[in-house]
Length: 335
Ligand code: TRP
Image (cartoon, rainbow, N blue to C red; front, side, top):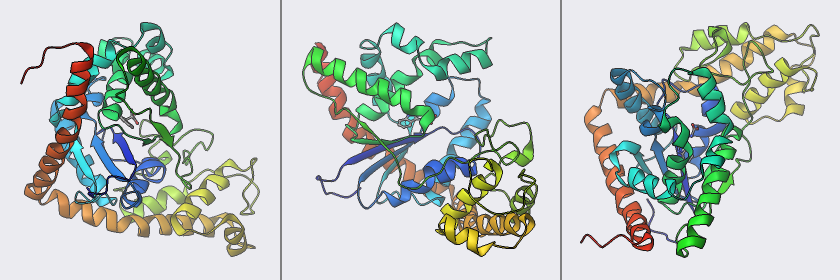
């Protein structure tokens, strides 16, 4: 990470739950690399959050390494940013406890993600699932992050982190920075290719609904060809054309073209041509990501070097914050 202290600090995390979707890419990870020059960026693969739902241990380990390689393949440079695996840095668990004691049962009970996930996994409503947002607050507050890039689904958790930071500061004295959400300038929400009213999600039963960033080009093109559209045949961005609008928004983010020029480009052409163009543009765009991912996964020693250095750097920053928090709550100095 750059030595410049005047840059703002960005923290973000992503769960290692299998390969990322085009939605994860466009909405989150593709921005991470672009922020590295302007900010001091800290990125984490949050494996501790992942175990709040049942995971196969062998797969979790594999997915964590893959997620780390993927964020690098998507542009995170471990020389410019701090990139690490959450469970490697003990301060997250330590601060989690401190913050849990400044978080109310009532506020955690209002979290919509907790309600959704406990409805989905009624046989495993564990305490970790309930206190998930406290660990997320610890992730952010341990580094005194100014800005946190998050999607809409995480806004409530970020709001909780802000409240906990303020509560701790007013109980014990100023320590934590109250973080703001970082909303990328472009970064459309990517919808399902089969039901454009729904968010693109890996848990969709229909395999054609979701593009994975490691999908082969022919698979990507085929899924776009099958994308659900409307019965009209004009390529135009409109609220009553959610399928076409979703494809236009993807095409726009990938190519940098605005809606007016896309409409001109496909004037008089049918949906078939348009879908093929979107599929090819996405497949071409993701090719270097796929190639770099393969290269990194074949070089485990290098990956290890990167995540080990990342964890060390993350610990160096966060242990100072945790030491101060321990003092403030009244723990006796240990060293
Ligand atoms: N909960 C986030 C998600 O599922 C992941 C996450 C964990 C995170 N800790 C974070 C995101 C801190 C931003 C900042 O998307």
